Image (cartoon, rainbow over all chains, first blue to last red; front, side, top):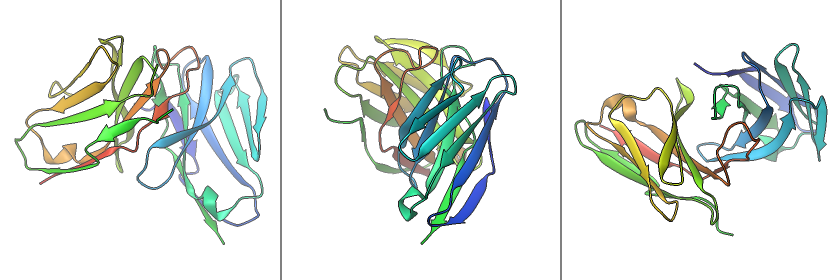
Length: 110
Length: 116
């Protein structure tokens, strides 16, 4: 079963708006990562947040982590059409491997 | 550095056949992980190889196997193909084992397998 579950499953926004997607997981983790996948391609690493961190920024990306709620959120500010992709969270709570969530499909309308 | 490469990119097979997929990791990376991605099941972890040894395995059936060579290149084999094996197969490499240490995984473009 998937360690992470993203919410919402799909999101459609206008270019320039912010996009927020959430990830919930079940077991304790050391790290949580977010990846992006363009249609039918490989995944690209976006950002990693450690369990002792609460917030992290990278360019237009902002990730938060709440270990008490076992949840994380990814915020993309000032979205662009090129941000259209699926976004996955990945956690390391299931032994020595990464487990990916089900993904959020983001569509940014020009 | 060259990225992760996977061959072939596309493959069509019939039920009952077997298939071998290849993955070349980024130079210097010792870990290679394999994933199966389907619309219904999402991204499913298959196995991870590190220094020629299988270190982690997901819940894939015994028809799925793999190996890693001394140059870290990895192959995945699926025997007795079933229709449900149609998927995008992704491999990812990392310097060290993927989980626990916050290792970033670098993904290849995938091999799209269609089983008829």
